Length: 100
Image (cartoon, rainbow, N blue to C red; front, side, top):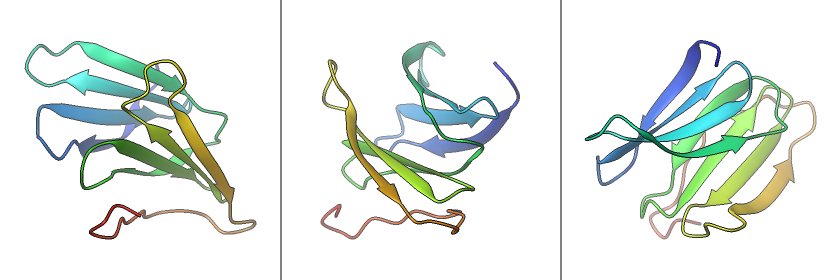
């Protein structure tokens, strides 16, 4: 794993997500310090990382305008949606209060 680029805390504060320069996202248990899940994205450098307000989704975006959303409640197929914003680097992700 390369150097960690982004760190975001889960809304319940028991977990955190990290992204590294190799497009790897790791969900960590803060209490034990152990990784819980790993997501290998197809993104270039991840420039944005955000949990939904209810903590059920994790979104990440890259410098080429790709946005991936993961359903953290699905252990079998957590990939939820891909969106593309061509030629627009994603640096920030926000959820509305209803997590849309």
